[in-house]
Image 1: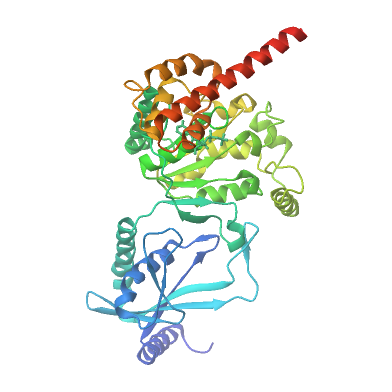
Image 2: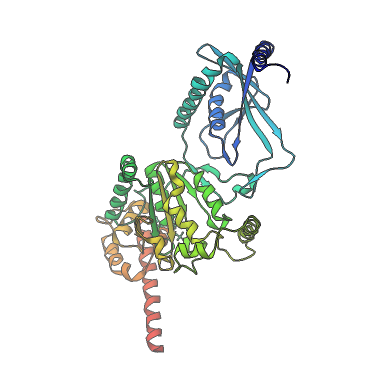
Length: 454
Ligand SMILES: Nc1ncnc2c1ncn2[C@@H]1O[C@H](COP(=O)(O)OP(=O)(O)OP(=O)(O)O)[C@@H](O)[C@H]1O
């Protein structure tokens, strides 16, 4: 207190010079989680170092994620790795500290371990590290990611168990547009729509809209809704996020889930009518918000518990997410982080859905998938039996054409019959005609009983 400020300043300078002479190195800590979300720099460092650790580290962890094509190298705890960049030498250390109790986010218990990288270098290189080296690490990691890119299927169903928002497995669904049996013109129309969508980055930015598109697929079970989603993801080479609304405990958790999705992804909510309570669907979202203001923290926690109970099947099966939460999701405010996303809802009962959900801008395309028609049948016969219906099996094909409209067979029903006949095309066609006749017979019998009752 008695020293004049100028002297203070000089003494400080002298001490810091002395300190840097004794401890010339500084460290940057890069933690796995940044408050609530995955720290992208940690992920980048992990990818970057995995490419280097094979040649430099003395102990390496090697793993092969289930169904993945690639091997993953990673550093063991407290393992050190020396890297150099433009003549600057840096030292990376991987640290893993076991936590006593997990601290949660969004109601989850996070992984018990506190994992982070420690990057050490001489303090005179601070600027190079900050301005050049770290961007270089991010860039290299991006290249590695592109090279090893494996599309992933994310789900929030069991993610809670390992403390994450989403758990992921490689996405290897074999469905393609070639294998999907739907009206050929509808197929071409969907492909053109998707291609146009992914090529319109500039357009969406110019008109000030989130770069997202909403599809609703509706129709009876077994008409190919799930198969079409997989075909779309394969066509666009997008990841898939399978969002189970009944496992989402609140609107705020829904937001967190959506914000953590990556660009170039398809976000799927299957059977939306079964997962969202639409009993008050005639209310506008504003009315609903007025009636259900955001709950106080204790209430939110109660809702979370209720959500967990629902998940475990103890009470009902609907999500605690409200219609307005889902409408906000479809409106895409959360996707302000950029990047294209396709949102797909499926339902077997389109009539149960709130008109607010269906309006253009929310659901841009409504695609009806229905019972098997002639073109779809021919496509299935080609795929499953290698039969070109135009040439062979003409007699049976004529019967199929006659019976198909009355038999109400879904593509799944037809595929099931064909699957049972291995590669025997004639048997496949005969069996499918028999099945159609049986169904038409049942329909006629039911109609007869109905008229007799009347
Ligand atoms: N249009 C189709 N083209 C080719 N295969 C189909 C088609 N529809 C159904 N299938 C076959 O039937 C199986 C079930 O279809 P899928 O699960 O896609 O139907 P869905 O409409 O999603 O049914 P649900 O409403 O019960 O979920 C698929 O594995 C696929 O082999």
